[in-house]
Amino acid sequence: MPNKPSKLIQFLQELKRRKVIKVIAMYAATAFIILEVVDIVAPSLGLPGWTLNLIIVLLSIGFPMAVIFSWIFDITPEGLKKTGPVQATKEEKPTVPLSKRKLKPSDAIITVLIVIVLILVYPKIFQKDKFKGIREPDGRISLSVMPFDNLSGDTVYNIWQGGLQNLLITTLSNSEELLVRQHQAVHHVIQGERNISYAAITPSMAGELALKLNTRTFVMGNILKAGDKIRVNAQLINAETEEIYKTYQVDGNTEDDIFAMADSLSVMIKNFLEIKKLVEQYDSPVIQTALTHSSEAFQYYIHGYHALWDWNLQEAVEWLSKAIETDSNFINAYINLSWTHLFIGNDNLARNWCKMAMEKKHELPLLGKLMLDHLHAFYFETPNEQIKYINQILEIDEFNTDYWHLLGRAYRNLDQHENAVIYFEKALEIHNKWGTHYHNSLFYMAMGDSYHQLNDHKRENEVYELGLKIFPDHPAITYYQAICALSQGEQKKAEYLISKYKSIRKNSSLWTESRILAVIGYIYSDADLFDEAETHYRRALSLDPGNPDRMNDLAWFLIDNDIDVNEGVEIIEKALERMPEDPYCLDTLGWGLYKQGRYEEALQALHDSWNFRTVYSHEVYQHIQEVEKAIANQNN
Image 1 (tube, rainbow, N blue to C red):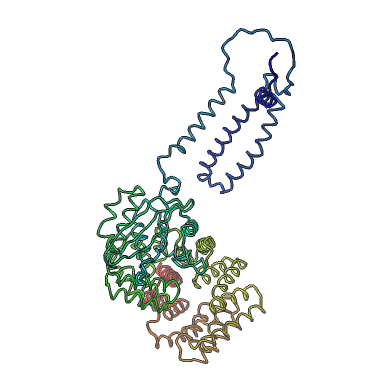
Image 2 (image 1 turned 135 degrees about the vertical axis):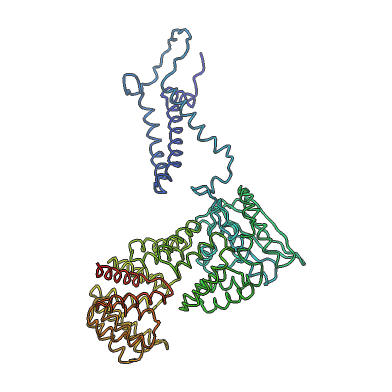
């Protein structure tokens, strides 16, 4: 009598008889195929990032249900039937002649599933492109370059911690195969980590910083010195797994060799990332001369660059000027010095530095040329040209919040506030992702005012409050808050804000009582409270009757709101006797003459205003269009 099978064997036999094992195999293969398909198509369809996780949860829930279902039921030609128990019998079954087993539909299904699974698994096992996982959808490899750690023991080399980083970013950005985060973006993210020093940045921390920048690969390294020799070590690392793809080292004899060492590093990194086809173009003299070969000038530039973005503007002027004095061909220093003078309010100096930089445009790499083209458009062209160049810049450097801000301002200058707020919000979104704040007070004023023009006062106030968290008691932000409160009929809140504004301004020696009253007049005027506005404008002028700015404030108010155009023209003509080339007074005069029907004189005044301006004014442009239209109608 044969031995009775063990309970385990009996259980396995029962699983086989009830086709549970076959169902498990088919379910697993099908689930794998579904997950792979979702992983492939989800990005293209724009599905949310949690889609794959949801599918995994649903498949996990379905698995035990499928197993239980297969245990209880059989699928037969007659339909769904409950699986019966094993019929115990002592009689031997009659011998059945052996015959070829017929193929069942389930066999074909299993075969197809196996083939599909093998097709999907093969590239994962025999992956030829080891960098496929770190490529962006467009095929480029995203890359961040971290500051280098100075381990030489010589503080002279501290400047090269950021210097080497900047050199590598500049040279690597010239590759169409790499998507390199620019120095400003990396600097902002590192600033978001409190009390962090370059020496404290570990590979793990650098990986986290790189992921905040949406890059899956990063470069970090250190500077060593032994005797008269300098050595720079660098590593190319996976930001997600911290796997080191490659290590590099370059040697030099003096500090002046660091430029050549940085060039060597960038070439090796590019070669390793399989972009050898661009090595010859990369090594062109145009790219090599994009920065400077003077270590002294470059040190000044690094100090000036950081002072500019920390809003230490006078300090930035000093450092950037020294960089240009040391190397008169240092084009990057020209660009940043122009922006610095613009922020200070030295408009003519800003334009002059832009003009000087344009003479050296051929020496810039692609990104630098586009930035210079935008700067030139800002001074000498229209927002439409600015938008064109900014969009090209953002294709290369999508995390540059300064240019998202400038894109929003360009649309705002065209009175296209719907577009403006989209790009302002993009800048905030990037900083929110980094866990940092955008340290530019002008940004919050422009963004809030655009929302004001769209009558979205809830978001407008949120923006102002966000700005005040970074710049407490900022007078200009308080100014815009007061306009919003008045326009919404919140009289008590507005009175409080106006009182607060007065108090802040009185603490500054640059602000006279007359000037403060004039600005309060603008607050009431922008809120369409003309009686209060006129009272403040006239009080301001009575305190300082010979001031052309105060004359222009009242004249513009009287003319633009059709309160007393003739008086406005008389006042502004007196102002122009004192400041005949002031573009603002000329615009006021031109607009007043137009409303008096003196079209030819108006057009001349407006053209003079346009020519004396340092930046584009959409308002003056519209005034010129209006007057030219009136002249054309008059001549018909």
